[in-house]
Amino acid sequence: MDWFKRKKGISSSEKKVIPDGLWVKCDNCGEIIYRPELQKRMFVCGKCDFHFRVSCKEYIQYYFDPDSFKEFGKSIKPSDPLKFKDSKKYTDRLKAAQKATGLNDAVITGEATIEGQPVVAAVMDFFFIGGSMGSVVGEKISRAIERARQKQIPLIIVSASGGARMMEGALSLMQLAKTSAKLAQLSDEGIPYISILTDPTTGGTTASFAMLGDINIAEPGALIGFAGQRVIKQTIGQDLPEGFQRAEFVLEHGFLDMIVSRQEMRSTLSRILKLLQPSENKKTKKKTSTQSQSRGESNEKPIVKKETNSTSTENKKLPHESKT
Image 1 (cartoon, one colour):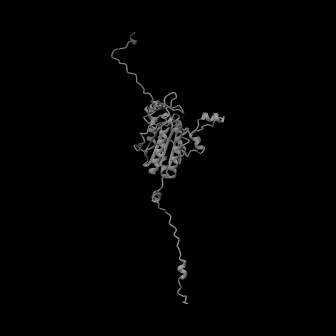
Image 2: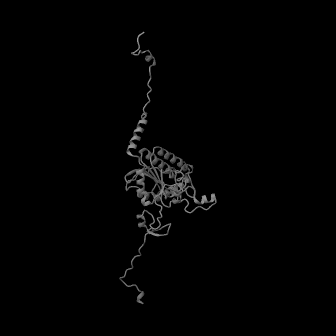
Image 3: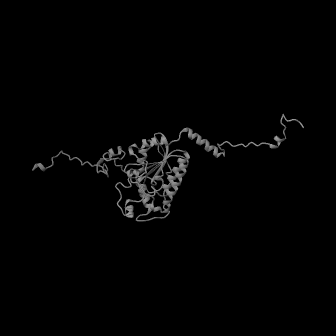
């Protein structure tokens, strides 16, 4: 039969190929979202407000003014002083993470502006070995704190980390004390520090700089804690409450100041910076006081004690006294 014979002159159209990753499924509500639309919403689900995990480059784009971020400390790279090896060499893990993310380590530091206000920023990347804090991360964050102290401008740290990096052993644990000591110096100078906690912020990061902000802000639904839920449950032998270690639970128990959506973060940071910035009169007074102290001068007026010459007063005769 001619029905099943292909007629000449009729060409079959090529099958259209849909590129991978064009549609994304929400981890919270299961909604299938068109990826370009999700990007416009800063990777926030339009149905349930779930905040997807994003890289440090996206956070820089969302939180700071366009083209204002100027990176420093880029040349600092990690090493393997312990020659660590588990199922894979630590050096191989570093190379794989560097190739996948385009970063040298799990944090980017730089200077930027938020609605024209200058800040020093450190932004972590969870996609680099779980955002773990090793020697390089601790060093770069410490240098960022020091730069903020020297330039007398606010500091912002965006945390996204699973904790200290086990491949560096005690060297990674030393970064907790190192960064905390630097933040104490920053606090003594009266310079504002805003800590932004994203999903997840756990382990040694939570135990150090992430929870030491003058203002602690979290994204909605972010996992925030020290030990994991399974470890806590096994230790106390009880079921954990619903929403345990999520941003809303942490806020309710007083460890956070506010929860801010990703789309509103930049404007919120701008308002906070304006409130925390000292006035020009206070800046001038503090600068003058610092300069005087560096020259060894004191602002207090010296107390001058008048000395009286009792001998001359006694020997001097008063006008009404007669000569004897």
